[in-house]
Length: 107
Length: 116
Image (cartoon, rainbow over all chains, first blue to last red; front, side, top):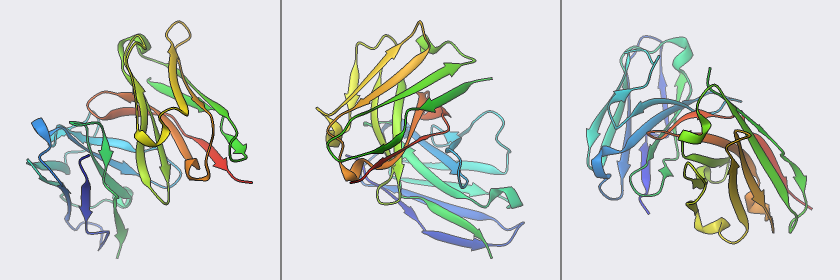
């Protein structure tokens, strides 16, 4: 099983600042089959990025994904008020496993 | 508009059974793999089971094998999860989700509580 470790657990930032979230895999994620989701309280997760770097339809371009192999990053270039939420990574190369999440909170 | 509507959650005693349903609309249901994913404070997000377009291939996380059964009815555009021998640790919000480069559509979630 591929274990995904996200860091930091919580990121305290102000609107307009840049957020950098990390997702590290215990083994290579083949073909970079990695997804990022955003989840707000009381809602289901929403897919932001697939294939490590492809933005989903309707997702603003301030969200970008990068990385390959075992190290992946989600960057939010300038935080908007609606971006404060929990973010999860997931790999879908070997079965499907999720990271434990990073909470982006208002500083 | 793609929509998935989950139902069937509730409170059940350990050892009991529940059946979750998910009705799809807005897309060609028979053309997609579908999954059940659950979320709890203790375990976070966890894939539970999925099946292919015609339901001939089914896969489960080890912790539910032999207890849960995933199925679908393409004519009714519906996905099901039959849960037997429920345990306290199965307590979670259960989501149906469309498999497409991860999960690109989710239901609103059905709350399952296993407690005596």
